[in-house]
Length: 584
Image (cartoon, rainbow, N blue to C red; front, side, top):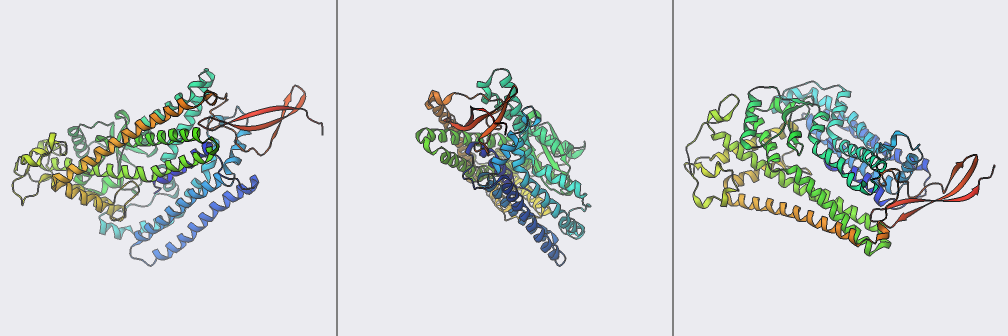
């Protein structure tokens, strides 16, 4: 699996070049640059091939092939990170950005590439092709592990399925792992189209604002787009679907549908996609629904409902938008103060944004995962003690009912915000009895450990956006038994929301301040035939002259490129006539 961070860094590198430009330019010809780019990526593929041979030898002499497969996947993860670093070197140091930009700029103006971000696609093509090669190499190793999964399925309780074909496997990996890149490419294509329409309608001055429309459209309909990209189908009618819908209805959470994710039974996972109710879906993978019990599926479903209930997707987007505004606004203010260091300041601004993506988003995401876990524990606590008629589905309660009594007043937080309204009113009869909330926490923790065991992941290893399973279950145990721990956690989440709100305010103020302080001469727009960001010509052209034909007289004109003193770097063409071109 490709981590979302790797996709984000790849997109960020491509997006940064039109703003920052080449940090330095080695004296390489276009062919030398091309061979350097291809050669470095070929080395990565050959390295992956060597590690694959070693993994095949280990798999023939091991009793746990899944451990060998997991180690090989970690190796591929590191090689993918190296390929992203190599792309940055190619673009910013080895003239790869300039070479591709020049090649695209020489295409006819009426060609289809004017609507398609050909330069961006070509820039990111080498690492993406390398990743496809990695999946092709991984297929054979995973097929061997799958052939021996009959033994491991008896140990982990997972049902055995034959491997998909190599073609199906690669398509599944591309659909699953390249979704962020696909969404960004869709935004870029739509921005080019809206920019051309704005220019044609004489709304060039509103191009920046109009360019936000495609971003909003794609973000709002992300759920619908991904439900098609990930090959999902609606969950069939039955007791399980009725039980899940009943839980969602009692929780007051709206979405379009519960869908099954077709992964050829290779992925055990669930997700909620889409910030808008009419295009929001809860998806559960086929392997998850097949291998988990109904109560475990319900626990995973409750976790995904927690993401929707707390609007985590909107908070992610708001945090990224706030960080972008802050970096852009402060960077612009610094450029006004130190105009001679514009390239350095652009690079520093980009690095600050990378730091936020790597560490800030990771911190926010981990807290949101804990909050969704806590929501699921509360929902499962309700399910454990709800009457059979309220459960839905097959009409059976998940566990025998227990006698309940109200909590002591001193244990209830003000306005009951730290627990659900139902759970604040009840607790176990005696100290020795297990409360419904503890049962709910243990039910979700059990389902979470089950998902990790089926996926072959380590419960001790955290991810970029997820805490480790042990960290999640330990926090749930504390929250289920200590109201003080719940208060501290809710205060932590409240501070996070306030921080994001204030970040958004600071970002808007900094951008407005930079716009008001920019001299009028620097704010004059430049007429373009297309979007100045995606279609601007290269800042360092290989040739300083072009041949223009006027009537029957060929003319040679001097072409130079100069940078306008605007907040966003823009390159404009200065064409000067040099007289008739010699016949020779």
